[in-house]
Image (cartoon, rainbow, N blue to C red; front, side):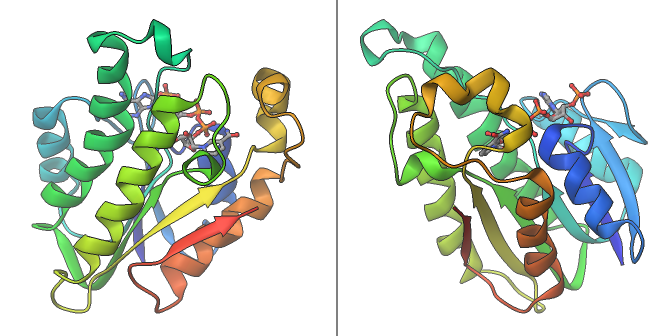
Length: 199
Ligand SMILES: NC(=O)c1ccc[n+]([C@@H]2O[C@H](COP(=O)([O-])OP(=O)(O)OC[C@H]3O[C@@H](n4cnc5c(N)ncnc54)[C@H](OP(=O)(O)O)[C@@H]3O)[C@@H](O)[C@H]2O)c1
């Protein structure tokens, strides 16, 4: 099937691409490279991407940024990073993608363990992940034509542990390839409204 992977050049995205590329037609989308480029913080850029690509069977999002920092140091701008990128960026991929998704298609978004297991510096990530999980459950009941929507919530990815490991004391990282299998389940299975945890 025709699968758009937004964030296909990233740590998670590369592993998801690897897991799906032999059996599917993958359309690579990222910010600075790929078959198509998009800025998920810009709704017009998302609309243009769908207009350029046209109809598709599955959209996987492995992108979205949040600001990491202490709660007492957050200001309006720092909250906006996660709200505009990881949260609204992914929500807009769904709401605009609805016009182009084929019957029985699927959306798969990315959240993360911090909604369940908070860490110091991770308050914005916890907030945004929780919001996406709730969005996915609510959006699932409004999908039409057999379209499904799920989220994947990975723990710390082993390949990223050198950057973030010190903040995740006691968390056991998983390989990106292991996390990628949850995306395969979401695309190839029949569940909807499900948060697949990988931890
Ligand atoms: N890594 C982890 O340990 C981990 C654990 C749990 C959850 N997650 C979540 O998984 C997702 C991916 O993480 P990652 O570590 O794979 O990230 P990453 O390696 O930094 O990759 C990010 C991807 O998103 C693209 N991107 C960046 N800004 C964008 C924008 N404004 N519009 C469209 N695409 C943009 C990048 O494209 P370019 O290469 O062109 O910039 C790249 O393909 C994030 O939501 C993250 O919170 C990650």
